[in-house]
Length: 456
Image 1 (cartoon, rainbow, N blue to C red):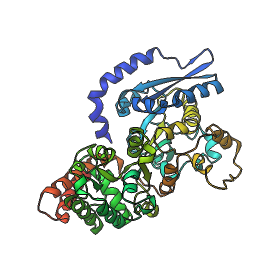
Image 2 (image 1 turned 90 degrees about the vertical axis):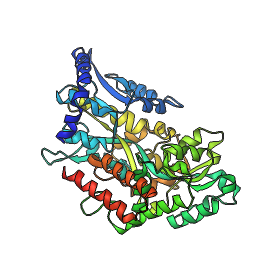
Image 3 (image 1 turned 120 degrees about the vertical axis):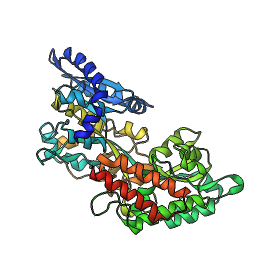
Image 4 (image 1 turned 30 degrees about the vertical axis):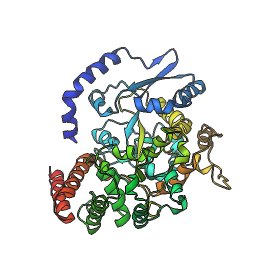
C-alpha cells in the first residue's frame, strides 16, 4: 500500500497547501451550530438536481430537522478524492463527508488508514439492524478489515448503485414482430436472437458490446465468464484467466465479433453506446445507466428503450458497482457527518438517485411496490429512516426487474490491482482479435503478466 501513497505525493503537495490554508480559518462549531463539509463530484451534483433539485432539497430538509447542523456542500470537478490523502495523513481534511468514493477506491482509503469507522457514530441504528435495510450486494466493501489491527469495521454506507444489465431496443423488437417476452434468458438464446435481428441491408446488428481496451474486461469478459463458470475468481482470489471457461469466454466474444454480429464500433470507447442510441445495435449488455441515458436523450425514450436482466444473471447475479459515503478520520465532526450521510443521502435522496437512472441501494423503496407488501414491525429508528423516503415516489418497472440480480450481485476481485489486471486482459483480447493464435495462448500471456504484477 505504501506504493499507492508514494506515487501520489508529488501531485498532492498543492492540494495539501490549499487545504491547509482553508483549514486555518475553519471552525466547525460556531454559535451553537456545527458545520459539516460535504464533497460531491460535479456530475453527481448535476444528476441529483435534475429534474427536481433532489440533492439540495434533501440537504435543506435535513437542516430544517436539525437546525444545529449546517451543511456546506462543496463540488469537485473530477472524482479524484484519492488526491486528498496527503492532508488526511497530516490529520487535517477540508471535507467531513465524501460522496465520491466508489466500491473500489474505498479499499485504497481503508488500506491507507484514512477513514473513520462508523460503529460508534451510528451505534443505535446499527444495533437496530441498519445494514439489513440495504440490498446485500451493495454492501460489498463497506465492511472491511483494518490492515493494522485485523479488526473489521463499517467504513461507509452505500447510497447509489450501478448494475450490469441488458439494454435493448423495444422499437426494433416490435418492428421485427418480437416483444420483451422474447428476450434471452441465456447467452445461447442471446446469440440466436442476435442472428435473427442481424440485417446487413439496413446496417443493423443484433448486439453490441464495449470491447475497448479500457472496458472490455469489466463490461464483456467478467459478466460472460461469471455465467459460464459461476465465478470470476481463481483459487487465489484473482481474476480467472486460466480456466477452460475463461478460454470459452475469449473464444465466444471473438466469434461474435468476427461473424459480424456486432458493429466494428464495439472496439472504440463509447461508440457502442452511440450505436445503441442510433438504432444500429439492438441488444447492448452494459451498465443500466447506458439505457437510461438513451431514454433521456430521445423523444418518447421509454417507449423505444428497455432495460432488464442480462442473460444468466437471475441465476448467478449481476456485476455491480456502487458509491459509498465515507468520513475522513481527520474530520472533527464525524458524528454529525454520519448523521448527514444516513438521513439526507442514504434515505431522503433515494428518489433522486433513481431519477438519475442509478440503482437505489435500500430495500424499502423496492419492497413497498411489491404486491401485498406488509412490512414487519421495525425499531423506531429504522421506521423513522424509512419515512424520509418520499412515499409517493415509485421506482420504474425496469429497476424493479433488476433488483433480484442485485441479491446475488458481485464486484470485481482485488480492487487494489484491478485497474492493471483489467488493462492486461483488455489488451490481450485486442491482440487476440488480430493475431492468429489460440485463446489459450492469449490468456497465457495475460496470466504471466498478472503473476508478475502480484510478485511485485
